[in-house]
Image: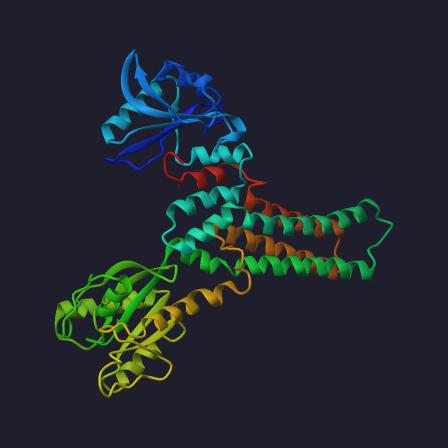
Length: 451
């Protein structure tokens, strides 16, 4: 990415639609726009009132390409922090391509994925954590994920990081003062105060790390296997959680022969539901392969919904399944609880996939299993860190621990200060204060074009 170039891209998804929006941004954005855009009265974009939508047209060599609504954003008042022009033209794959080709022919170059957001970061319009939140906002699958992305875009994570950095900076300043004046040893009381501040910072880092699980769930979804004996109601539960008929439901045991995946939203959490073949002994080669895949799906799942038939007695086979999934996140679901004589297994959630009874209780149990245990007390402001944040914070945590150990064991202050600088550098990476070009390229390359 060359920040001195003027870039252009289509910001809306490809396809046929009423409108398409193109972005043009850079030092020469207005000069480029003057060569190919004008208002209906013939005025050039460089004379437009900023942030006012103007009816105009896109033209190339005197020929009108399309009618469009043009908006100019000046410098710091734009998303990227530099002169930007947005072109809202008619939708359509061919027409949109022609408009983009016209803008490129006037002097812009095609933008790379994420380059507009990267410029917003480089121009100080947002920090790196906020920039990453833009991608989370676009890809959010649930209201909970959307809310978390909005909070991070508003600076929720950045503020927490700044508090931690300020605290560690204060400790580092104290240590470096003693390095500069070696005749004055750090007293035990001062060491205790500094160590207390470091321990408090550790608590703050740990609070953020506890949100990593929720962050991963909200961004990637929770792989959830629906498993159990034949005819227990796995496919019926899949359909209920999805809200529509997706899997074939039949009273004939062994209907499901292969795994079936669909994404459902349960209380704001995206679940990648995997419907599986009923687990039993079978002589049928196809069914045996389906059962093998069922066990494989259960092994890979982050959550297991173990569906049992409440209308039949609890069997030794069910006990064997419970033992096989020991140590994994598991919720036992007693289906068919509406039938006469149904016996709900202790510790299970009673439901009826036929009537819908108990489904709210099941969704609440899923939420508690996945979210409540993961966020501790740190999810109030919508923070849910991503994988990159987790790795960096783990590095910062280790460095702070080493700093505490060094102070308590009276190590050379230069070594103690070195570890503390490592922690500060790691925390700075979260918000991009110590970023390198390779890191930026890796992050923004995952964005869509036009953003």
